[in-house]
Length: 162
Image (cartoon, rainbow, N blue to C red):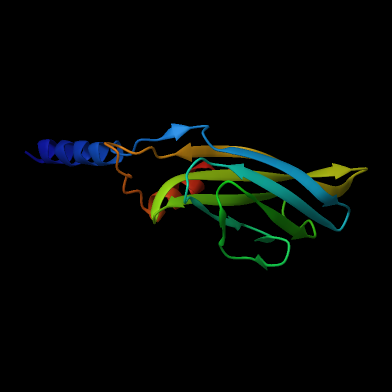
């Protein structure tokens, strides 16, 4: 009886985890460095995410995220089909992660995880190379948004960070 109960509980967990429908590679990110020197790095990152009212909530593990006038070390909000600037003064971190959560009408509809890896020139830190680790959208099911929790997305971020 105990084995059946444990197996039943395990299968319930599997079913609840498989209820999330994900599609990979539907968010496009491109980057262009503004300034790369031996003391700081500034990079413009453009996002392309289809959706009329979709907003992007962006946060970096180090440095500041913002537009041309306002920067923050917490989540900054942008239109999803736009861009933002990441500024990192100094090169204290070998790897920095930039988390992007896309929301439409309050529902999480996708996420992106970017990785910035420090590179060197003449044996001195000189900037970061940016790459996309994850780019996921949660499509509507039966013409309704899925109920994706922020905790689920944060767990996915941690899962894919090296």
